[in-house]
Length: 274
Length: 291
Ligand code: SF4
Ligand code: SF4
Ligand code: FES
Image (tube, rainbow over the protein chains, first blue to last red):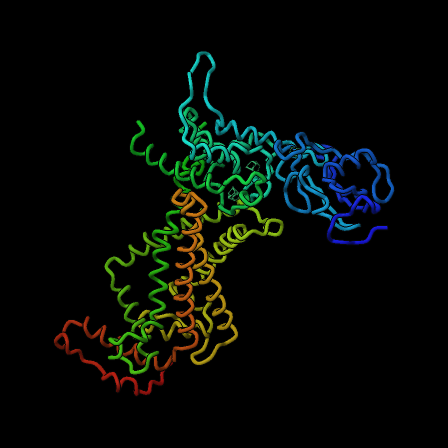
């Protein structure tokens, strides 16, 4: 039998504890959501994904009813792809790196899983993150090379710039910063994506490529996109994004840097544009 | 494409930045001046030049405040300054501010970070601030006395005494509605001071003055200091008008200043420097019976 102990996590010698999973489910786009509960036996070092795998293999709810396996998305299982992002106990994070021993150390503890609320649900915990990739296109988050001729070696980059940019390049388009942002809202219709708030990650990506020796050729176009409706000015400086980013990307610094670039660009256009 | 965009969308960037700027200049600057003026009811106690009008410290505060109010009302083009420096910018800032604020959502329960709470409070203080400013201007400026406890009409010539009455609802004590209005002032003014200090902090990010986290923190300390000082000015002013001012004594001091003021403006008066006044000490002991 298991006793409720906060620490240390149960050892192999003891019987496995059971953790109660409350999962917000949805059968498909536009379908209503419902809650289902599952009692999951927890071996040491479990994470949310391993528990979801157990549920997939044993799709029976806590009150004994047979149900469909819970659907989720994941890929790398080491917090670098961002696919498994969901809302766990009310806060957004990656589920693959979410350890049950931390979140539910005791027998009978509950873990609540919900899909991200700012992206349309495809099914259960799986959401459609297309809008984030559309946002990267909106800010032209790439280095322009047409590939028809050799450009030779790229421009030199100093260690300090490279250190700054390396951090920014770690973004995995997971959506945490959008999910937690009070200015970012669900927008299922792609027609609305161009003018609704773009979120912190693409703003930071615009900075990453604006600061690149070759990427800066598109700087003006990136700023153009970010100075319009849904761009940098729609940020309300709540700074939730930087708090929840799993990669600890300095998003608020990127927002300040793009704000500065936009200020300069506005003056440049006023006084110098033809 | 640009034909289909609304005015707000076409001028999105300019309007957003003007909104940010207008909060600092002129509105924030005015707030500093206004609160410093009001606080003269307190710092005026140390104003030795006001000793000419009153022997007691509170009386000196009343005289100093009256002097400040007279100074503002005697500014040239005061109406134009108010219209373009104040009413239009405040209307612009308020209308756009509400339009922008409704695009936000509240998630401070799930994400209870300090920044998120400040974000939420910035919007809340904006909403409350608009309503408070409307009440403040309607009652004290446009003379909507039916909204003033006790029905006092604020007079720029008897500034401290009528203000104390308009806050308390009664000359010597708080009426129920007076208590309510006093609390409204306390929260309204405090929220507006917060709105300004926090807005000063976020504006620096918006314009790109503060980029690094360290710079944002340093500027945060500056803004917090500004906020604390303004809060001190606001609270001391309110405390002065709510608790310190003795309405009858204040009227006496104001009466002296009134005569002096109007005496000077009258065409055939005594030579300057020798105004025809009630002696200050005599003025203080005058037993005014009107209310
Ligand atoms: S910036 Fe951080 S939180 Fe946002 S998408 Fe990238 S990795 Fe995720
Ligand atoms: S700082 Fe801006 S982008 Fe980040 S959470 Fe706040 S509003 Fe969203
Ligand atoms: S599966 Fe890739 S981040 Fe979790």
